[in-house]
Length: 142
Image (cartoon, rainbow, N blue to C red; front, side, top):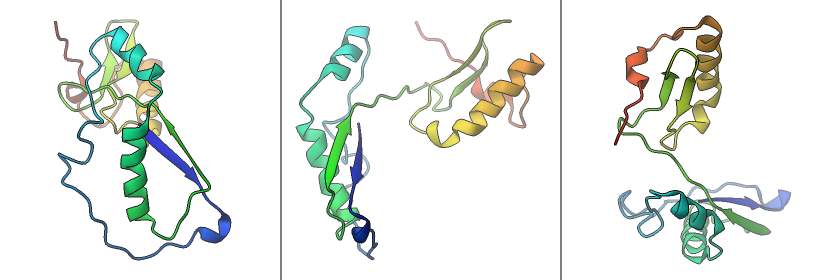
């Protein structure tokens, strides 16, 4: 899940503050779950009770930005695809199918570069990037 906030222009000052983060393994305890079937994905996106996630993200937002008081907050669903390798799957699956999948929670920040890889590889009909394409090969599971 992600949270977006809006706040008045006069409240945009930042302050030096020490964040009291929990250890990474416990920060989202109870908020993460595996969605293994289409039915579980549908239930996740139809869920209406956001209170555990809202409380969690509100707490950390206040720690990060203690001088900002949001006018409103909006919470929405988010899902990420994790791969066995921890890297995106990018490349030709067959002669006519090019795949870019499995963002692992990091693809948004690399979207332009992934698009560049995809577009150039599709136009040229072969891998076209400095990194070894074997690093991005798809790993199939049963």
